[in-house]
Image (cartoon, rainbow, N blue to C red; front, side, top):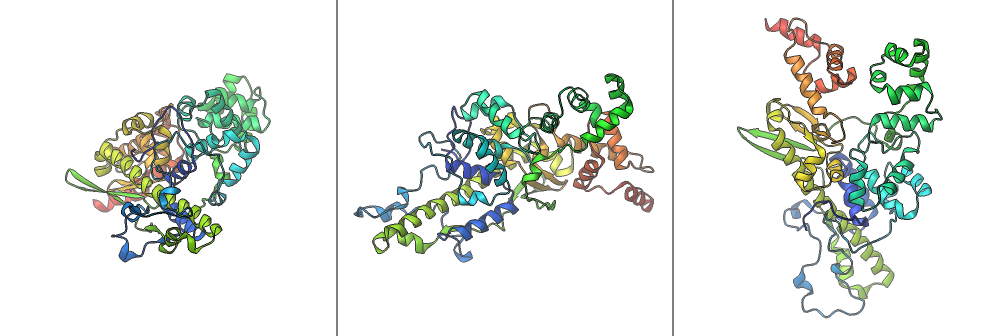
Length: 461
């Protein structure tokens, strides 16, 4: 079975699959932290000494030849006794139907408080599906693919999936799991007690575009209310939270360290997985010896070691499977967008659902793979998510970045466009964007602000 999450008729959410899902969503910096935490909690897991890193195999199972011909007493074990055959795979197993039991390592996750709330509001049999949905959200708390897709991969009725998502949407500040930000805001207003007939609710439901552009005149005219009433309603709408997951996250640093780098040489390119800070792991030889010689220890000690080794092997294989899948995804992106990445040429917007099918993945797997991960290229540093649209109506960010680049390239060199002027031009083209977002995209493209572009022009003359 290949190391990937595939679209199957039914999904069985085993602890191993949930671990793989969690690891896949982590950027490299956070993976390093998770590995350090795991090393502290699991005594059977240790860092492979540097001099042995090149020689030690990733597969920590005992070699078959060491077991061949050996007579085993009733209380002896080998790793195949307790390590599932699928422990390093992204395929979906059918036979194992283990219950959802949050482990100690999950308690340390930033969203654990959100999971605790779900445990009080959902039936126990729905918890694995809620966990899967949580892991499928983007950084803002939006669900980037339709209900039908989730229903198909989870193998449960759309009504049941919808019910789980409805519970998510009702958790403060509201709207987590919505497909669009408009739907997210409506859920927040409902949670805050605004009736559907209120001016605030009607503005978001019927005049969302006018709300984004703060077009008070249009809203007042269409709804036949005064501009002062509209302004009061807009003041109330300022409390809406566009990123509701922020409440459940301890991420406070916006520093970006690319997870991948692509280097070009003529028509050829190479992709570097920047995981030099990720240590190579192995099972401690001491604890492997405990399992090889169980008669020297109490049954309780052996059981403890056996469980911890199982967790450690699953963790090691999950990291390796994550690396393989991410390299496939990044290779796909680079191949499709090499002109843009190499020299800032034309972008080829990618549809998340279509790309997932082409890669043989479910859209939720691809969504996790591109979450909070960055690629460094000659033309800039880019969020992997920005290359994709979700397939449910959004515009890929990379198309907007390309348009920002085109506007600057065609500006009057004697009067360069400010970020606000670029924002206004994009607004006229139907792109709703904030000035600070324009500035962020300009920085990603390594383009200086307008006053420096004007200064560079003067100095170059």
